[in-house]
Image 1 (spheres, one colour):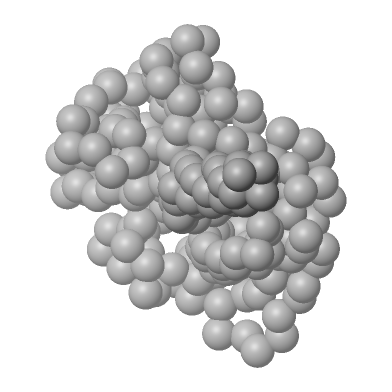
Image 2: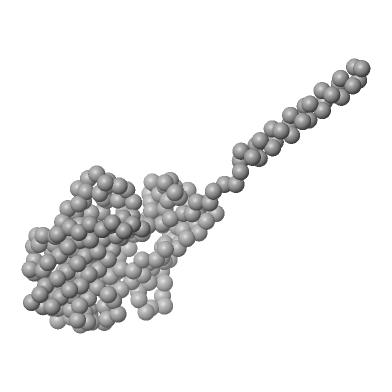
Length: 255
């Protein structure tokens, strides 16, 4: 009788272990896949020839800033050129990896942020312009004609250039300045009607903000963002006496 009691107790213990194992497996389930996202920011803007600028890649996974990326590398090259420069990004904390670089020539450039983090890889690309705001009208007209012949931020070929500018660090619930510098045929464009169209990335609700011309060719407006995240900003430019009606779209990150 005692022998059967011992066997019964052993069977209860084994059964209990099995139940616990099943519960652990059931509770663990399958981990939900959350991709990493990378937002590229370049500042200051506009990017001027022979002046140092900062490239930042903000890496996130869901709502979490990724500070432990195994590798972040910026690949930079000039449009239509085969030479690509690759620079390793420095970890600045808070999910930000950055490099500093200057450009000796004006033109259209491209940058790819190659990010390897948590066994995931992504490589977003951003295009940008390097300009010379001090160039004479003749020099600017010639350079712009080659630089922007195929871009969508011009009017009548390459006559209108729209250079979007914003605060380097824009934070939620604080006033942020949106600015654009306009040149038409190499000279500042004065007296234009300029509006900023702003909307959160991936959403349909758009807000239009009228800009004020602070000085020749420079227009600005102030906005307070109520939520963090990536936003689209489209600069709309109109001037009836020159038949200008154009726009250019950029992205900003609110922290």
